[in-house]
Amino acid sequence: MPVEIRELQIITTITEGGGAGGNTSSTSPATATGGEDIIAKCVEQVLEILKEKTER
Image (cartoon, rainbow, N blue to C red):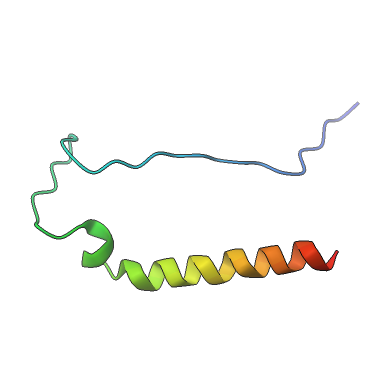
């Protein structure tokens, strides 16, 4: 009998600091690459998903 996965949750932890990459700039990567725009788009998508779930 096949198994159907209806929902998948991926949880990650992102830490800034002494990693092997060694980002030495004084600004955080989010603000250096226009992170506010990315965050706003993500929030919009999450709100759309929640809206769709409540309409069902």
